[in-house]
Length: 198
Image 1 (cartoon, rainbow, N blue to C red):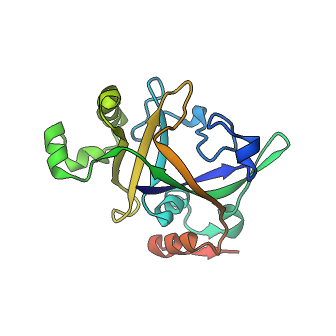
Image 2 (image 1 turned 180 degrees about the horizontal axis):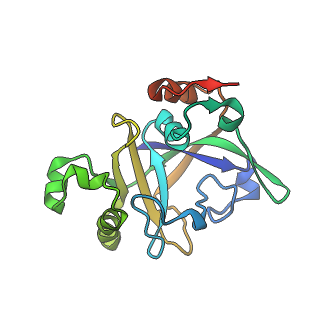
Image 3 (image 1 turned 90 degrees about the vertical axis):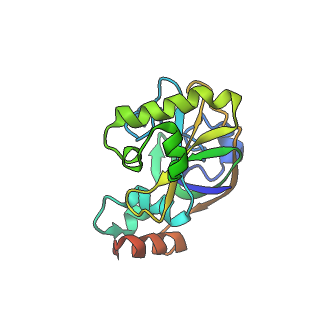
């Protein structure tokens, strides 16, 4: 199943950053940033947040700005002497993402739809942790639910070992730098009513 994420990537990552543990790799997850997300539980797993639609991946990153400056959309990140480009990363997910938009599944879990987007992170993390403990005996690769910034979009979270992530259930399909003219940026801008400004 195809998903997307926005990441700062070393465009020569295949030779210079071959491991997902390397900053600049398309699957790199910044560990100090873990713990604030809806389903994060960094003591047990590393969370890779992704989106079903390219525009959703863009929108999730930029949604908090009332307008989107062109320079911010294409903002690179400098780490030491290296420069990483903001990119849209296309991914293939192998395994099942539990669909938290499925009322029957939520009923089996004893959850309500409002619980999924609850601001009570302790509750949402507990649901994720219960599924994480079962993932080794199932093909559960993570969770998916609707985006709080646009319910027509689907967002998801895949998990992996917090110490040595290999992301064996995630395949990188494509990595492309983004700027204000990228179709996914234009689509997200229109969908969220966020003007792109010079």
